[in-house]
Image (cartoon, rainbow, N blue to C red; front, side):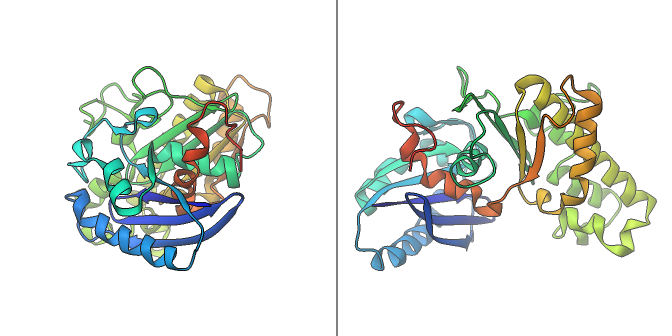
Length: 311
């Protein structure tokens, strides 16, 4: 038996197949239209069908990681996202049952990524861990004593990007003021590019700040300094709130963060009430597939009697 995991992003969807402790298959699908789930489901179905032809054994489940507030125990998407706005009322369980004859499990994308790291990556062996997605927005997930933190409204540990770090800061897409996202994120960065009439850099995102022709520019250095400052603040807040042993960085911007991990490490050791070296900061070992891998493992975690690292 094996399971399929899907990480449903706004521009691409990652698909993996997992059997026990092995990743059998992984691919990325371009999202042609994110205005409705209907537009991507046919492409996902075709991808899964092609893989199933080569696997005679049973498909035990499909897991989907979604960029929204998710009631995982009840498989419900709770908040309307900018992309796939019809997801709240869409019956994905019925889609999986009719199309593939299998169960479906939903999870928030950051929590799914942490599950993936717990099974196959850097969080394995740690009871207390934090995953930060540094991309267009800022997502997060927390595991304490081997269990995902959820809370009464499924928000706990999930919204470090919407903690307020600047009381008189910019307006966030959550209608808050001075959230970490509104002070330094992928969409904040694109707004900065527009402000300085460099819309041509939006496709490059964070990488544009590291290009040789921009490194010496005071304007680009100011933008980069702000981003790093915001990420340091989030990590310090995460340590003080949740006391993790490891912080794992994922998302598009995290791909260029290796140079700054020592900076984050130093900030934590300067500002957090913990012994030096207590918290490790590392870039995700699973890269863009962390969420999909975690989604494929969801069926293992829904039974409270099943340990998180079961295979």
